[in-house]
Image (cartoon, rainbow, N blue to C red; front, side, top):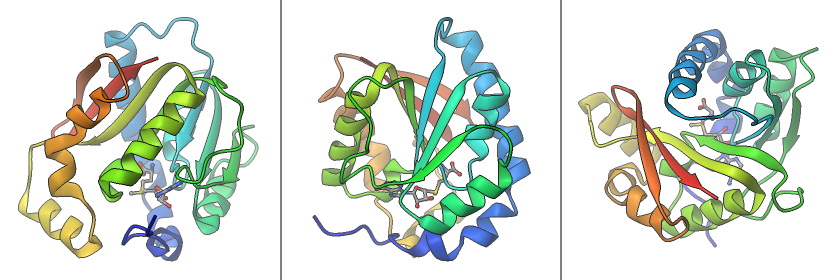
Length: 198
Ligand SMILES: C[S@@+](CC[C@H](N)C(=O)[O-])C[C@H]1O[C@@H](n2cnc3c(N)ncnc32)[C@H](O)[C@@H]1O
């Protein structure tokens, strides 16, 4: 399978990305507070964040009492995530979800990937959904763009060479090939949680 256009890019921009850590942590916290009102997550204890970047989403889950593991394919992102979350107890490791992650089946209550899926070609997205489903006991959540576009977003994603324009059209149907139903939760003007139940 060929690497997506963004492979390596996120390692190079990790220091820049880290500047937005606090903003992202707060924003993800707002999303989790909204989600906890809409989805019954009582009894859920553990979360795996796939493509965790600098660990801002991990921090938001951790602050709400979850045991959190973050994994990213870029070593430099993982280094930043460890530094930003030092002393938290959140576990971070380097790993590529397309090649399989080093955890047994059904290791986590929730497996989430935030703004990872749209960057991958469709064939790799399917591999990712399958691997996330293997690792989840309850929910697989794809936190990503919805169909509400903006000129700036179109431009950035075109520069990045991502599969964004196709992704927003097909994500729901793609996920339905892995899950018997897929719920949608709008979590921002241009962001949706696509939720598959295991
Ligand atoms: C746009 S960033 C999003 C980071 C973070 N989840 C957030 O919401 O800010 C995408 C991240 O996914 C990671 N990533 C992309 N493909 C991956 C893969 N196959 N396995 C693990 N991580 C991956 C990238 O290295 C990058 O850190």
